[in-house]
Length: 88
Image (tube, rainbow, N blue to C red):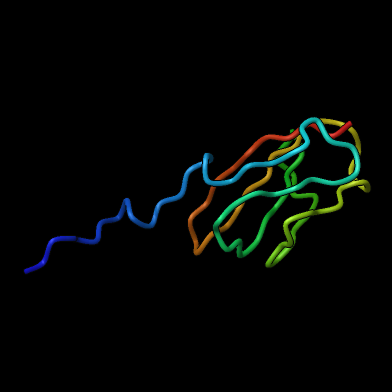
C-alpha cells in the first residue's frame, strides 16, 4: 500500500532553511544550510542587482559592497528565499 504522497509543499523552502551570520557583517558572510544552493543574487535597498554567484560556497566575501542594507535571494532548484543583511 502507498502511505506517503508527494505534494507541492514537499519542494518548498523557507527562510528558516538558510541561516546567515554574522549579521551585521563587514567582509564576509557565512551560509548555514542543508540545501544545495544553485545561486545567490544580492540586491541593494533600491532593488538593483549588485552581485551574483552560481553554486555559492558556504562563505562569501562581500568586502567590495558599500555599507548598507542588502537583500540576498537564494535559488534552490528554482525555489527562492530572500533574506536581509546589513553590511557595515
